[in-house]
Amino acid sequence: MIQSMTGYGKAVLQLPTKKVTIEIKSLNSKNLDLNVRIPSYYKEKELAVRKKLAKALVRGKVDFSIFVEMTADETSTSINKGVVNEYMQQLRNVVQTGASSDVELLKMAIKMPDALKTAREELDENEWLLIDKNIDTAIVEIVQYRKDEAASLEVDFKERVANISRYLEEVKALDGDRIENVKTRLKKAIDDLKVDTDNNRFEQELIYYLEKLDINEEKVRLANHLDYFLKTLASEDSNGKKLGFIIQEIGREINTTGSKANFAPMQKAVIQMKNELEQIKEQILNVL
Image 1 (tube, helix red, strand yellow):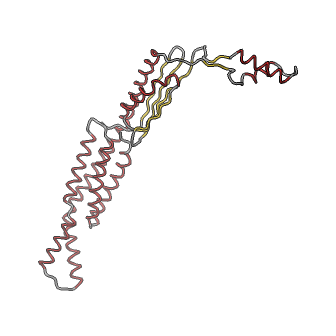
Image 2 (tube, rainbow, N blue to C red):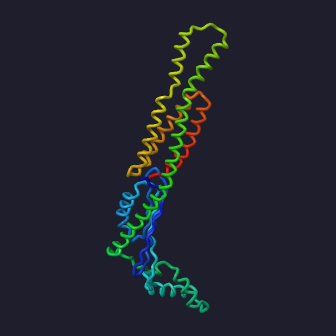
Image 3 (cartoon, rainbow, N blue to C red):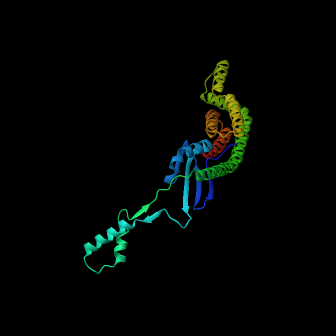
């Protein structure tokens, strides 16, 4: 079953002192492009998080974020009273007048370096276990999102492959008329020259020319590639790169058929096949 590389997953964890929101977003990319943003006190867990995301998401431009919102009454930041008092005393000495109130001096002092001190929060392993479980929840959500997104793509792919197969049948049906048309045009060109020709030599040259325009191999290979694309699409694994390679081969056979067609009705069918293939190519870039 294929997966899209476009997805979104979210999990929210309410802890006694904080609310933790985990978000994962992904877009299409040739490889895994992983951007992780987490608070500094969780940094030691970043490598493990990256490995978990890489294993689950495989490919795509992935943005992972942990947002922490403090909900407790207590705060880890406090005023460094001794430093602030010293700053205010120095400011009084500078001003040397009673015009400035302590409130104004306090406003200035609180902006000075080290006026505030923040206690560094240490990693709580029990807390991280809860966060890690919610990361798993967000991953499950984004993977499901990717599968749902890919379901519509799969329907579109099958429809367009069926259209290409239908146009291929038209090409097969037109092949007999094409050969007769080529023979007629060549014969008329010879007759217009008004020269005597050796019929045996003409037949030999005609056979040689028609062999160069023969598309039987292209028709067989194109049908095989279309069948292989559908089988790969139905496999358990999502392999967008493999599907992309098959699409290239399909395009090669269609282009060769078009270059050999030399018959307007057949070329029209080939153009329709190319149009369907271009629509697949645009969407296949988003398949994991």
